[in-house]
Image (tube, rainbow, N blue to C red; front, side, top):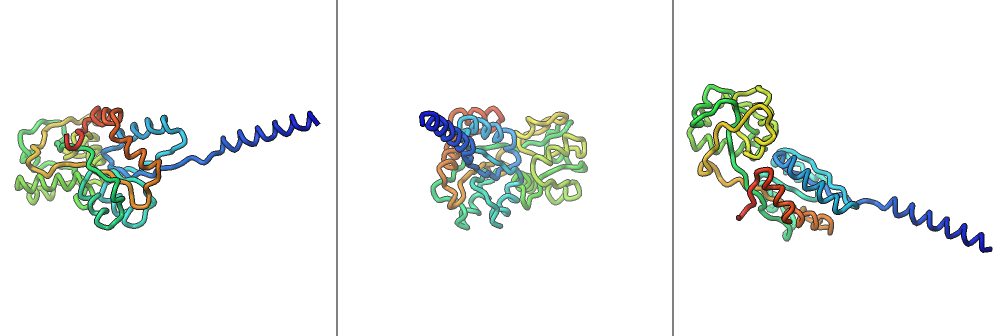
Length: 248
């Protein structure tokens, strides 16, 4: 009988250990602007180290394209756009939580290339990569800047449109165009090109990154990750990558 109970306890212990080992992990699905690739990946990695039961899956792309996916019913928990407008569009459609959304980062626009310029007009007659203004916030800012300088209509033959701002950066970095209008933070991952002109901020509306939890996705782990983005350790990583904290 004693031997039977020893065997029984052993079997039960193995069962419990196996059950614990197979505990289902929780997943958070994030749609985020392409310009956040490195910085958000690092922050998500840090979060997962502290919360080993949670997996964060991030889909990077143009904010406008990601917005359209969500409008079409894409299974997303959390969004992080390079455009306040895109988040507000989702809010107007009642697709974002009423409690969990905020402006979080700021960025600036620059021209990347290999030859310094003193004005944007020097890009005339050169190939210039910009994000597609219909879906890429950086492309919308580029269009606004060039319209304010009276250059947009004159440069129509110059443009190479890209699917997101990171692709525009790659065009200039791979010598496929002479210049690219990108975020300053994207310049940190260039290998061959450099910043050749910093765009005055008065030429465009403020570049605000906004994030939010989608409606009916306010699970505890999603809210916890939302809060993690503004913790001191995350703020330091954003700043290391060249972002400014909004409203500072």
